[in-house]
Length: 490
Image 1 (cartoon, rainbow, N blue to C red):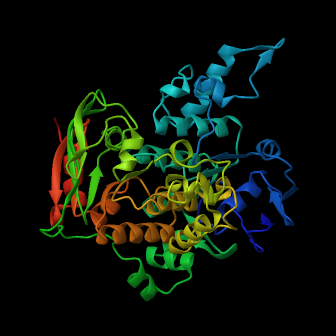
Image 2 (cartoon, rainbow, N blue to C red):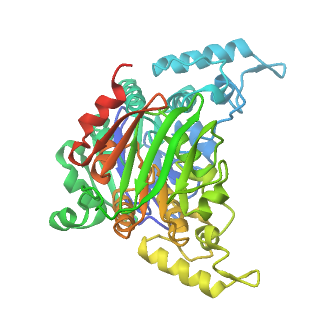
Image 3 (cartoon, rainbow, N blue to C red):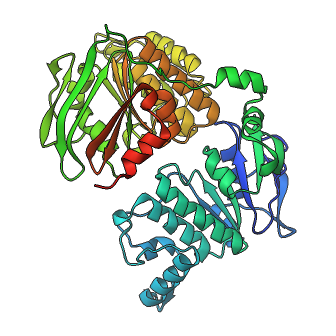
């Protein structure tokens, strides 16, 4: 396949049956564009594609599906209220005399799930499934299409460690069955676990394709960034403050005995000025629920939240924001961006009053603020008027972080802030978090990546089954200690 369009420059890409190919690059490097061309979402302005030596020209995703190409994206377009089988066969349900042949559809769904080793009830509503099971449903849809090529775009970004292992086993099954897989992920452990080969994109060009075992991790990152090894080592080091705050540190945030059954029970967390506090735990441990309760987004049954000793009105995000608390949700699509609005309006959404005079927004002030943070966070955007929905996920995340920076909040609750962000964008976000803490802010950092917690936090609170099971300080914050606490028996 050899597609190219605006955003890509003479990219050659080939993949064999039964091959798992890693596709890596910074946000904006061209990964999404290449995937969209391969899956028929957009058409290339030049170049050609072949499937099994036969020229193909996809005018739509349906054309690509009929040719044997299916995609599973980071944001799953599943129908929550419909059953697993209805999602797998949506738009192509087996019928007779216009009526759906339910027994046949359930059996075909069961067979597709069996091929990938997924234990999911075809009759279960999708809303009742865990994130990993939802990914299995999306893959089963591709299998049921008889896909020869499966494109997996950040499929593990919302999965926990155990769920990731299950997912990687599914990829091995696909490989053994002869399915070609394009795997996009920012998690190098996953890439090296299942991928045989890699294609590295940078600035719309393919800068390297080869066996992944021949490229070590440092070289892979330098290829993505276009930097040398020494520059990489000096620029992308651990970002955290591996020391405790000084004696003069002020207790900014105190959450005491927060309970919200069945998610969290009697959770207490303090954050002081100049401190990055990690909040670790497996999926379902209560990490996100704790942050949402502190911010007032979810109602909690008991407990108190204070900022510098002053109580924050429960269940009120407005009160939390006025008190100086900002919150970046793990689900930027649902709780973060406003897709139809511009980058400028999204970025300044929390600071409209300071930017307004007599009830009208000062566009001059707004543009100055936007320009400042676009430069500071290296947000790749055509201009402040560009719709935020058109940005890559990583750049959307940077806009959400900038939203609270321009508000000058003193406490930031960050729920997986680097999820789906490439290595360079991740380093920039981490550097910003470090600078905020060094400037006296307090940060509560939730992350699915243990390394981010270990490198970033001076203190880590570990949750299990909605309860605090460990509080680790300084050099005691290690992967091993966190994992022991997360997995310990009751």
